[in-house]
Length: 412
Image (cartoon, rainbow, N blue to C red; front, side, top):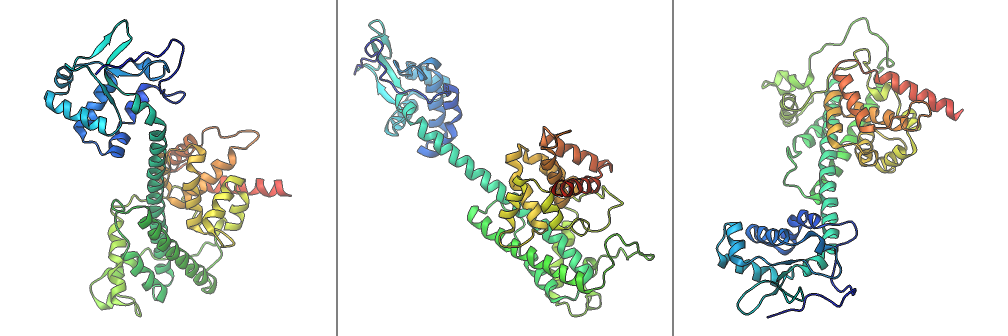
């Protein structure tokens, strides 16, 4: 079978790659092609060998097709396969609509009659499919990023819930909400590898509900317990004994009165995780109150940039003011807009904790618009904050005070 490959001079009849794309871009699409057409690994590698046997310029030239002229025996030797296996892969790729086989009756391949007759494996069908494959790749990448973001949000929400539970048990270990929330925490999955986006969305909703209930209970207990104002220095410091440890004890005497036995058993995961989770260092030893006690959500919300407030509005939903988890989630969501690599966020959370990292990001985001010393690289600034926190030299409270005061001055 022969084919007249070259068109009339000056007439463009062959498909070409989208503008700006080269043969190498098609090679990088190979994993997508393999999944989309359910190709075996050996068949996908054979297709790659066919692609690499063509001239790169033919993929962008509308007057010619990219054609692999190599004989089956040559390709078999190159791939470490038998000629029969290569023939089988050719048939598979042809049926999938990725190549067009144009060879002579004796199987010869090449360019004859001054380039007018082309015999070989044409990859023009693959070229025609590239735009759709690029769309498929973009959708797959978006889904991957969404899945990655949901896992990150679930991990952050879990850590916020854990710390809020620790504060609740410290203030009111006999509260009925504490036992209920401990049960919820104990039933959370330890890993998210096997969860799809739908499962992660459901898990995130459960975590949101638990965090909001825990923080609301903490706020009510704080308002009704006669706790001193933030910053008030007590002459006798509170004991460092952890209520969680006493609740894990095996004897009934060690369990706080009024706390169900099954609730105590689920505190074990919280205590056990202390050795596994990265613990944020106490990088500001002069800052003892909780961050949202020193800097109220209302002040922080007002000090945020318009972009950050947009993400906070999305995170808090119908609530009037954002809570601790809302600040963390908004920081995670704004990372792509600021061009910050997720690894920089992980570094910051390990150095200073989720909430402090979110507050640092609020400072960095607002400083992008500083008329005197704007921050040009938010990712570099966040990594710098993390290094300073590890060295015990980060004055995040001072940065937040300056940000709040500047915002108040601007408003007034």
